[in-house]
Image (cartoon, rainbow, N blue to C red):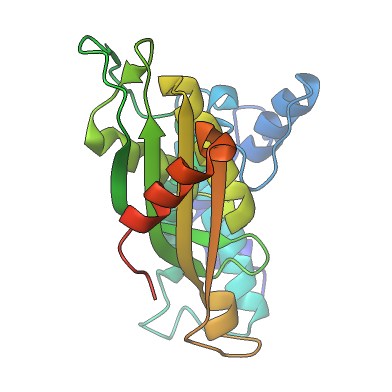
Length: 244
């Protein structure tokens, strides 16, 4: 059976541009020409032109249908899977990997008018990501500690959660995700110190492999005075609620 003939012709057409080239190829060409990296946890929104995300959705649906066909699943007769390819494509592009394809959320920054210079902690922020190795869920919590100075930009508490969601909404490795989040918050706020702790369950361990449902991973990033001052670091860690 010809796979394309079993799909609506509008899907196949929608996955191509006016010259008949898959939109993913056009986006990739722009990235390569600009010598920009496009790893799983990179954001490529700047290289996606208006209307292309919808075409990319059609293309991913088409390719996902091929995966289902190769898994020998009769999506035409099986009412549970006859629209699965579309659902999975929408899930990846519009939800769980959205952080790759959309620009960073707008963040309003305010001057530190009161010259605040005391430790501030935000968390726990629930984060959801996916392991780059198997695309299995990574679900956990993040705590963020900020030591501001008089020149630090102040952002709303909810904005920390939005930045975390944007960074985690990509296939990630937890160690790299925390560093990416720290770099982003550092650039937005310019504090004297920044500390981030993340604890997460990895379903690539609980769902497959060793099938250990109880194991978690905890890692941290310390910047500025949190790295230099052990007393401040201990204060931050002591104020985080017990995680285990």
